[in-house]
Amino acid sequence: MTVTLTRPAWTTKLEVEIFDKLLDKHAPHLPKKRSQDPRPPQTEEEKENFIRFRIAGAAHDLFIVQVLARVINQVSDPELQLFLSRQLGDDGAHAENTRRRVQALSGRDPIEDIQQQVDKHWEYQGDLPIRNWQGFLSFELHYELHIVSLLLLNSRTSKINDPESGKFAAEVILPDEAVHRLGVVDWWQRKFDKASPSEKEDLVAQALEADEEGQRRRNQYLRDHWQLSHKAIGIEIADLPIIYDAWRREVLSYFLDIPISKLPKLVSVND
Image (cartoon, rainbow, N blue to C red; front, side, top):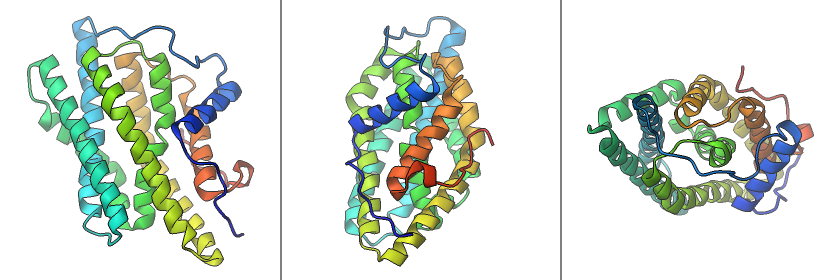
């Protein structure tokens, strides 16, 4: 089967349209916009849970930094190197801001706690992100695009947040992450467009196989992180597994230019 990328441009507007369509189908009771602003953590328990949540976020970003630092040295494509350099610098800044905000909230530097969480990402992922281009694509998809469903649900249903953290996220993190997602799409499309029809079939099969491995490796982490998110910021997660699986199918359908109905049965976050 020969595939050709014919999808509309991937944009944040398209992301919201896809997500809202999935809510209509799988969780129509969930809101499509925020009804009230989140409040700061108040009790000591809420503050401690929020700090754990923010440490996890810093670790997510620092893991990306550590992966990209290795990958940049392995690729020869200067356009890809420039994109990865931007992504590395942005996520390094995000992690550092979170580190300093946690320090202000807790009175201690959490850098060792952050690195311990980064080590867990490496344990789950193994060498997949740095093994080859297939593993790297899986890494980018899982750490940038597949998590968008969680981010959108967070933006609408979370009940607790630190005002300073929220301001930095809105003004810096969200615009940066949109650039990262568009960069991943651009890299894949450039790679895909250069391939012959037979090569495209191989690219699709290899990309899908690596993404499935990435999902199996991520499942336990995701389930644990969602529980922490619910406990720390009050995000609604009861419907998240089915929404996440459906969102991932939408992303892969777009990337591989295969109708969702033609995709094989995929690994579920609940597997």
